[in-house]
Image (tube, rainbow, N blue to C red):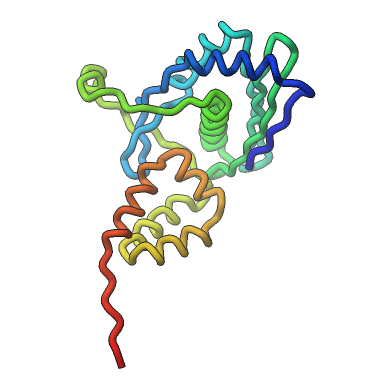
Length: 206
């Protein structure tokens, strides 16, 4: 869940952000996502491509995390030297209340919010460059509690056709759908493609 608020005027901020976005490159997907064995751009990659253009245009990002049990929130403020600002709070549920799970959830929300504020898209590095760096080590991305089981069930449902997949998707928790589409949209597209190829038996006439 995300709520956006802003200062009374944002004309100068909007102008500066527009210039900064014109200079911001896409972040490289250099970390491994265990779900669907895909890759994603980590927080460091997103900061690397945004920090310079933002600072050059008088913009700064401030992120403040908080946690209530396993419920984690990150407040993000985009500030301009004029005093104008944008503010948003995103919230998700960590796998458990342990410090590692909470920390991973905070990192995920920070990355998600920073990408949203700056309009950063993630792109794959070319094969040669990836080979030169060596293969990335798998990195566990924390998801809402119960997400992994839901993902397995969703993959199984895809083999029953588009209608069944869409029905299960619509009835699923919003947190699950948001996590999947924001961290691995390719995986969701892959499931839809699998479902679309399923040939259901013709109904038998009486």
